[in-house]
Image 1: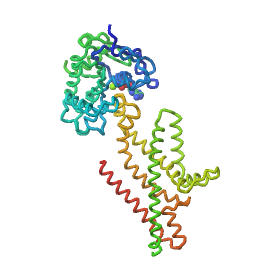
Image 2: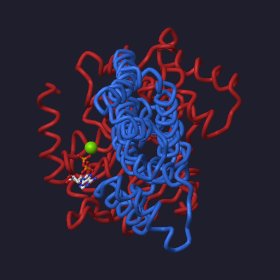
Image 3: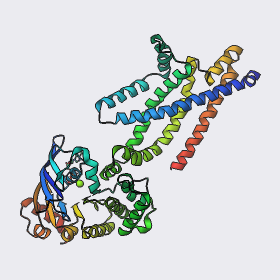
Image 4: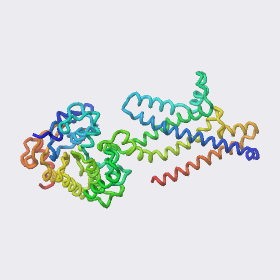
Length: 247
Length: 211
Ligand SMILES: Nc1ncnc2c1ncn2[C@@H]1O[C@H](COP(=O)(O)OP(=O)(O)O)[C@@H](O)[C@H]1O
Ligand SMILES: [Mg+2]
């Protein structure tokens, strides 16, 4: 068996006396695409943030390609684990292209011509080649999120984490972002995606993890999870999220 | 009236000195203020505590008393300063405490999500500060800094109590020797008004530029 690209062992995290993660363990193979589902407040965002140590946790370890992540090497971890946020978090004082090349220039110390060439290529790839000099205030939510994906890709990460990347978007803008995410998946990126887009989960995920109250309740391939959920809790949740979409 | 005209060069020199002290202590106060602001927000309790204490003391006591302590008080311990040094030091320390709060609110105004995105890219603290926080915070601080400069110009009149020959002091000397108080002090006031008005013009221009 190959070493998993990412492994979480028994992660515990509390905010005060609110135990948000209560022993999360899973491992992920290279090029695997995992979708995490779960009701709001179940700890999905916190879990993603613990993976790249944006949040500290009391117990447990994160392993990247079999190596435990050390506290003093966090920036090295983060260079390899990209993140896309619900609220885009685009640098508001920079143009689209400047956002994308910021990491390569100031974290990887790439030279400027190379970074710009790479940035332009990536913006093309997310369908924003003509918006490279646009300021964030001139872009729609869907466009901002695509810039954010290009910004994460610019670091050539091993893994990409997505935290509800389409939840803050107007419905008509969701499709363009999902399409970009699918193309990223098709190119072999290892991805962990928190989303309520069941269509995306069915099409793209290799594995679905269902979380509730800080624990993994159930996991499995999407067709199994969606047609024959084993636990009461996942049945309830899935019937709620699947039915309004008429599926 | 001709006393004013005759001594106008002295008053203009005083004005120049007022501007000089104000500008110096604003620039030094900015350096100090940034430092204190970063300390205040640091995770180290001790640094944060020192910074809190400094801000508390210097914002909570009158500038005049601060100057008395620095200029007269310290001389008892053989720490003797020229009025210039004591004046710049006092005004810088005083400015620093106010500017620290300006800088802090500028920093806090930067979207936490953007800072998190910077960290998620692998940026280190100082890179994040320089590339993401500073440019946005600086814009936020511009107007409050001009207002701080206006306050500084007015407060610098207190330097007269430690014999710095700034505008107010020059006015006092001329008025006391001529017993012609009214025209002299009106002229002093007018000169302050010109200086502060110029700053307000700058402030309005900035306000329009920054939207
Ligand atoms: N910074 C924080 N401070 C305190 N509580 C938090 C913080 N972030 C999240 N929480 C709490 O942790 C729980 C899980 O939140 P989150 O991970 O955002 O859930 P999800 O993403 O599944 O909706 C919630 O009860 C939330 O209130
Ligand atoms: Mg969430």
